[in-house]
Image (cartoon, rainbow, N blue to C red; front, side, top):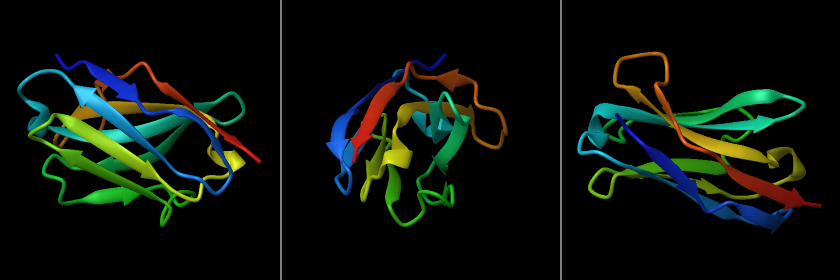
Length: 119
């Protein structure tokens, strides 16, 4: 079992930055690939970024590539999402999720953190 807790959301002006954190429980954090997703009422759930278990491989959605950076600290059981050049389209509830390395489906999800970008 893995429990995930996101933090770092809030209200930011367009063009600003935020850094989200996701703290994971358990001693097997490095066994999991970690992803960030976001949800809006209009678009539903949207993939944002994923980082593999070692941190050596990352993938981004086209809409955030070049602006967002996913990273992880396996010693601290934490994954981060640095978000720069935010715009109103980035307003959403952001979730982190964990999947066993090599698997496709995410088995564990956090409760989400709200990010609101004002224009």
